[in-house]
Length: 151
Image 1: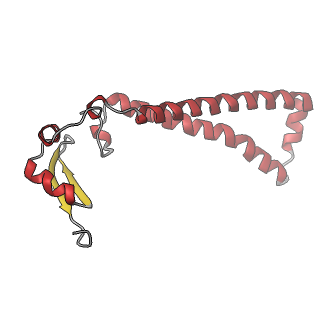
Image 2: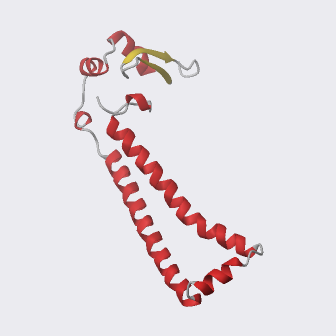
Image 3: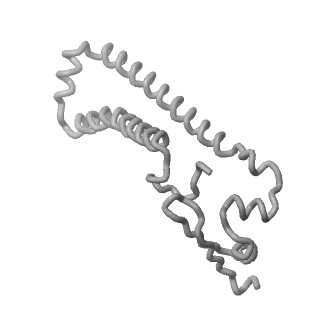
C-alpha cells in the first residue's frame, strides 16, 4: 500500500515530497509575479510618481502596452498550467483502484489491513471509528464508537 490515509511527510516517498515542494515554490512565484505590478500600481496611486519617469525612460505608452501584452500571455500560460494540474489531480483521484473493482470479503479485507475479524465486526455498526497507526503507517488498532441514539 503506497497511499496513506494520514498525510505524514516522513511516510511519503522522496518523489512526492520533492514534487510537493516544487509545486509549492511555483505557486508562490506565480503569486509574486502577479502581486508586484499591483503593489507598484498601488504605490503610484498613493502619490509616488517615479513610475512616470520610468515609463518615459523605457518608451512610454507603447512600451507599456507591449509589457501588458507579455504580462497577459504569461498569466494565460499560468492559468492553463494550473487548470491542467487541477484536472490531472482530480481525474487521477476519481479513478478507482484495481483492488476496489471487485467485491472483497471480510477475510481479504482483514488480511489487507492487518486487522482481526473481531476488530472489524464492531466497526461495521459504528458511526465513528478511530484508527491508530504505527510509525510505518500500518493499522495497529481500531476503536469504534457506537452512537447510542442509533442502537
